[in-house]
Each structure stands twice: as structure tokens, then as C-alpha cells.
Image 1 (spheres, rainbow, N blue to C red):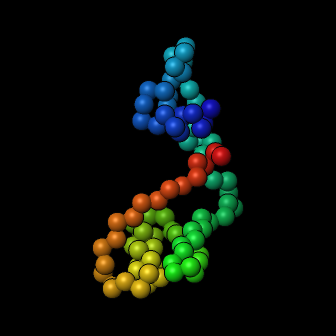
Image 2: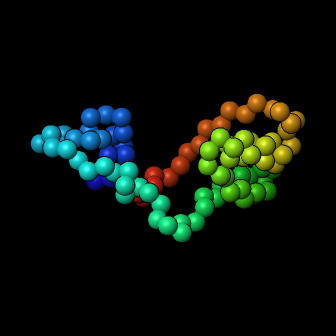
Length: 92
């Protein structure tokens, strides 16, 4: 059910059944990482060399990630990056 609600995020079907219109439970409670969960890991491949990065949450984490990425890619400091990510569904 949580997978369906996540796919329908931002629509009425995120919170209400499309057939009987009853209120659905909040899927976010099930999506919380359990205590002691591991940190996310990203692998960035550049020139055939994989580099493992552990991104951190929040604006500070994003700034640190961009700085690390600029160094990994050998770009000039202060380069403006626009990033797009594809992620696996959390319930798959």
C-alpha cells in the first residue's frame, strides 16, 4: 500500500482509497529508516574510475557533496552544478 501511496504522492489517492474513498494510513511512518540504519552511499564513475561518496542530509550536506563532486570531476572551484538523480524506490 505504501508503494502505491508514494507513486500517487501529491494526489488525492495518496491519502484516500480510489474505490471506497476511505482515509488511508500515513505511508510516511512506514518509510522511516529504522534506528541504526546505514548511511546512504553513492558511487560516482568518472573516467572509468568509481569513487564512493556518502552524502549527508540538509543544505550543508548538499554543499559538501557539490564541493566533493567538483574535486572528483576535476572542475574549477565554484563551478555551478545542476544535478539530476535517479533513485530506486524505497519500498522495492
